[in-house]
Length: 144
Image (tube, rainbow, N blue to C red):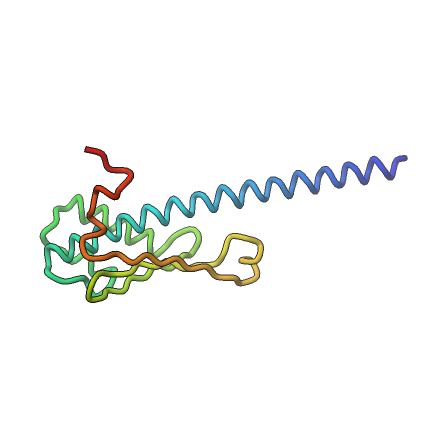
């Protein structure tokens, strides 16, 4: 009888630990998605504003800061976004590739799922057509 109680208690502890780890993983994954959405929106808008002001897309993601026509507040906010893109909790790597009719922003990093702990990678890419990043009618966070 004593062994059954011990076994039940052990299984209960294992279940609580498992559920706690799943809750933590789900919360971390949600935070990661929020950060990715923020960076994709911020960087894409900065890249598109660079193109509008300078006449062409920047050669690299860090060149977005070279837009001389924007004010200091814009430069500060872009610096925050670039710093977060270069150094973040999940060690995600953000990349940018210009093309003739737009640009692509991608993010890659290890997967949060248990398989990611064994080296599995994930990658997301978003292609923006010219002016698409600044099309506020498609932005769910913008209202007139």
